[in-house]
Amino acid sequence: MNHAHTLEHAPTAAAAGDHVKTLSHASTPASHDHPHHPPLGPLSLELKAVTLTLVLLPLLGIAAVVALSWSVLFQWLYVALLIGLYLATGLGITVGFHRLFTHRSFTAGPVVTFVLAALGSMAVQGPIIEWVAVHRRHHQHSDGHQDPHSPATHGDGLSGLLKGFWHAHMGWFIRPSWVGPDSTTGGGTAGGIARYVPDLYKDRVIEHVNRWYPLWVVVGMVIPAAIGLAVTQTWMGGLLGFLWGGLIRVFMVHHITWSINSVCHIWGSRPFKSDDESRNNTIFGWLAFGEGWHNNHHAFPTSARHGLFWWQFDATYVLIWLMAMVGLAKDVKVPSAERIEAKRQREA
Image (tube, rainbow, N blue to C red; front, side):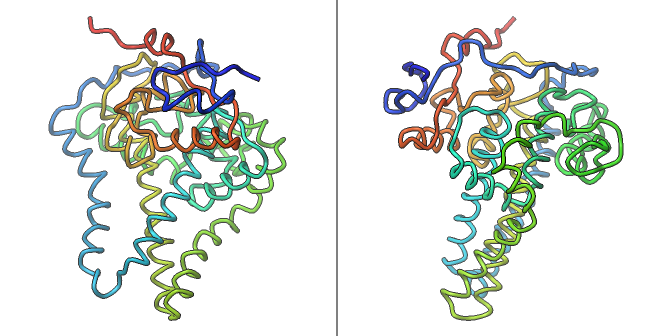
C-alpha cells in the first residue's frame, strides 16, 4: 500500500487515508512527435473574439430556446433531467474514460469500473476502447502531425485558426484519416490505434461495456424519456424528457468536451513547460468539470487532479477524492509540490 502524503493543494490528504499518493516524478507520454510548427503565441484580440464566439454561440442558442419556450415546453422537471444527465454522463467521461481508463490516475473495483464505463458510453462519444486509444495517441503526438485532433498544424492567421479550430473541434472525427486497419473501428487508412489499448482488451468489464456500446446510447436516451413519461403521465412529457435529458444534453456534453481539444489548445495560459500548445482555460475549467486546466494535465498526464492550485476548481478530482474517502478509489495519483514547482514556466 502506498503511504499518504500531506498535499499542499489537496482538500485534506489525511482524510483520503492510504489511497492518495504524490508523484515525485510524474509520468509523461512514452514518446513525443514534436510539432513542426512555431508556437502559437498569444492570440490577438480579434482571434480571441472569434474563438469565443464559435464556442459560446451554440450554448447561447440553447439558452435562447429555453427562454422562448419556458412557458410552453419547459418545466423544472426537464431542467432536472438536463442537469442530472449532464452531470452523470459528463463525469462518466472525465472520471471514467479520461482519468481512470486512459491515464490510470487511480484504481477502482469492477463495480465502479462498470458504472463509470456505462455512464461515459451514454455521453455518445464513441465506444470506450476507441475513445481511450484516440486520447492516448493524442498525448503521444500532442500537436504534432500524427495528433488526431490538433488545431496547431493548419496555417497562420485567421484562416489557419478557423481551419484548426474546426478540425480539432469536430472535423477530426468526420474525416478520421488517422484511423488504421488494426484500429478498434476497423477503419482503412494508415496509423492504427489498437496498439494503444492492450490493457483494455484484457479487462473483461471494459470489453463487455465496449461491445454493448449501442445499448448504452439507447439507455441514456430512454432514461430521461421514461422519467418524463412517468412523472407527467403524458406522451408529451416523455418526448420532452427525451429532448432535454437526451438530445440537448448530448449536444452540450459533446461541445464542451470537444472544446478541450480545440479551445484548450488555442486560448489560455501556459504555466507549465510542455512540448505542445495545451492551455489552461478558466471557462472550461468550470464547464468541463476541471478538464479545462489542460496545460496542467499535459504537464502531469497521470495526475488525478488537473486543478493544481486552490483557485482552479476541479469537480472531477473532488469526486475522485470523495470516492477515495469511502474506499471506491485507491492509489490516487497527484504530483508533489516539488514536482509542480520544478515544472513551472519561468519568465525570461
